[in-house]
Amino acid sequence: MTGAPSSSRPVRVLIFLLSPLLLLGAEASPAARRDAPTAATITFQISYHGQPAPEEGLVLLECRGDQARLRTVPPGEPLAGAPREWGHADFKGRRTLQLAEVREGRRIGVAADFAGLPDLEETEERAEILGFPCRKATTVLRSNRLEIWYTRDTPLRGGPYLSLLVPDGLVLRVVRNGEHEITATELRPGASTEDLWPRDEGEALDLATYRARVAAGWVTTLSVFQGERINFEPAALDTAAMAAALRAGQGADSTAVLRFAAGTLILRRLTLPRLDDALLFAELTTRSRGDAYDRTGSLFLIPTDRPRSFLDALAEGVDVLPAFTGRDGRRYQGITATADYTPPLELVRFITPFGVGHFNDQVRVEGVAWADSAVYKMDLGGLAPLLRGPVWIGAFIGNYDAGGHELSLRLSWHPGSRVAEADRPDRSWILPLFNTVNVLEMAGQEYGRLFGQDTLSVEFDLPEGVRDLRLRYLGTGHGGWGGGDEFNPKLNTILVDGRPVAALIPWRSDCATYRSLNPASGNFWNGVSSSDLSRSGWCPGAAAEPVTIPLPGLAPGRHRLQVAIPQGAPEGGGFSAWNVSGVLLAERE
Image (cartoon, rainbow, N blue to C red; front, side, top):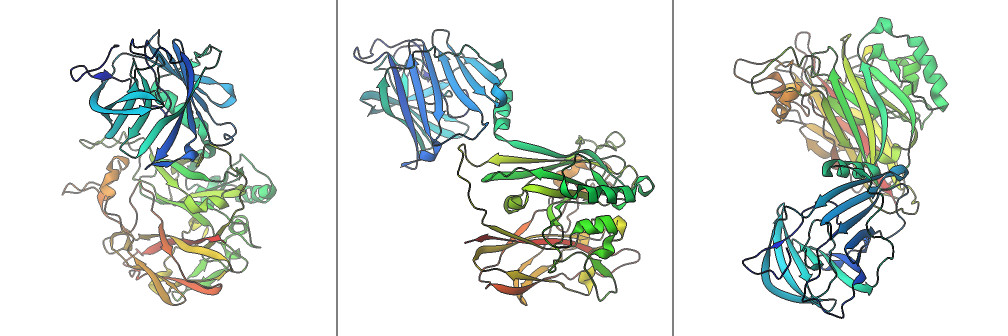
């Protein structure tokens, strides 16, 4: 596959879709300049929209004889423990190797040969790069239009990507969609005197496994709960022992999972890493162990920054929490912040599906393959600064079933940069304000049904020097009959100091998307399943989506925030309730 291309003989390229790493080719063309070096190190720079992108680092290609090696040089000190990658080519053997060193020095690799190369379309355009006359060819890869500029006027072979190979040429520029460009900016004669093909080719993997292993090397993961039962079994729960273990664990991490509220709430204390500039995801997995119904679930953090906390209620009962009596005569415990109490900070609101897992073998529906479990994965965004150091994390699923549910939780931190950055001061300001999800329902905490006759109200102090103030709001309506708020759109109005700042109707009309998670859902005469029906901000088998409400222009000082919802009236033995939670987020100047 050597020789000059023509319109009737397309150039071939190797598609090896990895990170922007390598290159390669074959023997030198007879047209190569006689004074061209036979060994060199070539530097490539990256730009976007014509502007240099130094944050992407540089790409270095070493070429000598039948071998080539490529690596990316980051723009700073690499993150500790991060994977290191190289690309290698053996022109004589017509093969390539992508190699990575993952944690603890373990090497993994994926090899490919030069067979099965797709076509490049030759064009008439020419350019000069580093003094070499270059031809332009094009191809389309996954809807991306690529321009490849290469020369045959040198015995050197290679390029900046493993995914693009002109076997008898040297690629000096690649442009993607006219926006992203990687161009050779320097050629230094001479290359490393060591063998450019590695002696240790690492554990041989297929491409998909290799990519997954390298990506995992960048990620910090922590298992919080693993296959924990959340069920209703009051007789089997030693409440006094759990309370004693809670008090004993106030100052130490533990692998032990504590259970409260007849087994419907689980809790663990652990220390989380401090990883700045990282995306933090919570991944929950649930499956039924006997409960057939859709249930409200909540993943939450218990703040301990004030004299009283939700931990007191777990150890001593809900009556120790600050409470107010509504116009309906009911006491609502621990749902709003006070001067000496912060309510639980809700991380993820999720609804379990109808019996996924346990009932899969008991129900068959034509054309539907039941999922093994429900998975909820959410970016925790602005809440990440509170998820550092020692924390109490809890999970709740409201149910009255002895089999209940099984729950796992994994947290994962994904770095925003490949290089280490100097420690930056934490400028976040986060204040949990309210949470009506009665996670201690089975221990006497009241449902959030105050909205029929009251407006939820909470006061807060806004300090000096904060900007970009916003409310992270979660609202879901419940009441599972035709007239209940679960099935009827209701306006949620947010007021600050008596002035409406937002009006929204939590509603989900995509619940039929999750049919494969709901084997125990009832199927109606008209071909619709119960799990298909639209609902007030939630679907069986899905997480509820938080809404961000900007709060610009608030002056430092004391303010009052209110939530008003026209909650429906009770009917027979049924009643409506609203699970709402809110936390203020801002940045300190």
